[in-house]
Length: 128
Length: 158
Image (cartoon, rainbow over all chains, first blue to last red; front, side):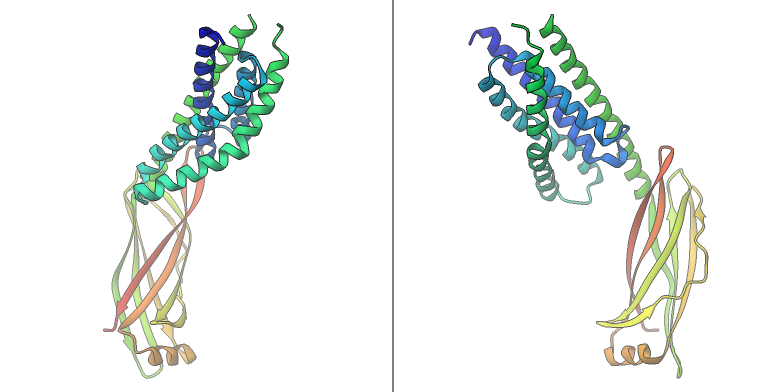
């Protein structure tokens, strides 16, 4: 694995995690979201396609998706904390625990399957 | 070329996701602000005992401190003395739209009679507990979001 491959892996994983985390945090605020839920899930899927187009090797891809779950979950937790703390009806501890719970659930329900399927499709577009 | 497209797609997705999140967050904060502008208070409370009934009176005041009119869809409440149920409240007014920076007063007078009155005497409570909720439609963008504000008050014996 070259230095450039390593850089690609880190940057692609970070960007995918941010996109996925923000999209799923918006989905949690679905009543206030400017777009329907399906668009947000579609975004997660597209992020998977982009990730699949950038990484070589299945093992690398799988590892990247697992890291995306973590990064996406962290971004989602932070985004939900920002939203919920504005409300301040619940304390920090409860808000954090709710946000982490939602992030874990979304990680397994949406991030993993959607980015994996998307990435596998994205790999089909790799020419070399 | 292929990689450039993937990078561009990823960049655009981050941008779009940030934009949608910011919009959702802005709408949510506005909604919270409107909801915080609503306050439910009780005034003119009284419990009067006569030979035939126990009359419970109170005025519910809904204050709307927000800049938007709020339409109230309905009000409901139940009366209790300690653990004993005393029946539902009697409401005669039709809920209106509460104007921006205005208030709405609803006078509720309920006569507790029959076995509910027996429950009241059995409980020997210091006061009557009013538990209820207001159903409202809060404006959100072009539409509305239905919300429920619960209230709870103990009215002491006169």
